[in-house]
Image 1 (tube, protein in one colour):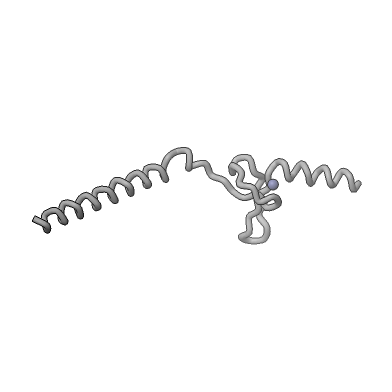
Image 2: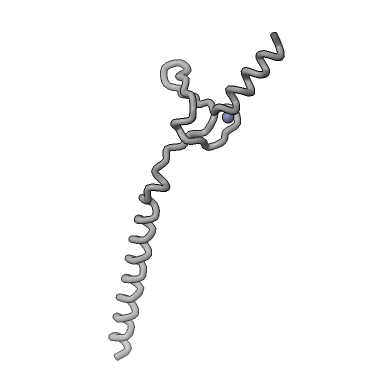
Length: 81
Ligand SMILES: [Zn+2]
């Protein structure tokens, strides 16, 4: 009797873990998470990749710059000249 109860309890724990894992996988693959973001090389904010300017430095290093940082750099350049 005790072994039967333990077996039922064990199956319930397995079922709970399976349901929790399934929900975690569904949440991880939801469309809200699929927006590609990259860190801006200057301010380090995560920004949607489509709103960043990409520049390759050397053979492999790729830098991304957000609009705000580009405008700030442009303003700083205007002040100096
Ligand atoms: Zn930035």
